[in-house]
Amino acid sequence: MNIILLLVIGFLVFIGTYMVLSKNLIRIVIGIAIYTHAGNLIIMSMGEYTPQKTEPLIVEGHQNFVDPLLQAIVLTAIVIGFAITAFLLVLVYRTFKVTKEDEIDVLTGGEDDE
Image (tube, rainbow, N blue to C red; front, side, top):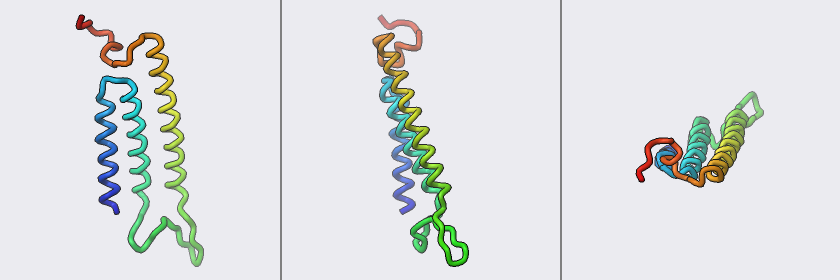
């Protein structure tokens, strides 16, 4: 199971890197959103899962408690990732409304190829 999770995380990082290196602003935003999903999977994979343990439990005496730390961190990361994605989408929309361009090369202020 861990090797499958590792492969999925690696694939998400690969796709996110490919999208971020694109020239289109929307693809860059989607790549950053994919990075947040990969980060969430990395945080979830930090939990100690063995074939004997099916849940990350804290055992004290005869009582079992679920460890809420990973759940709280992932929930916070999801909210922050959503907020960053929403902010970047608004920023791209505003940039497009002002400049009528969605390519990053045009926005750099370099020499024109015309």
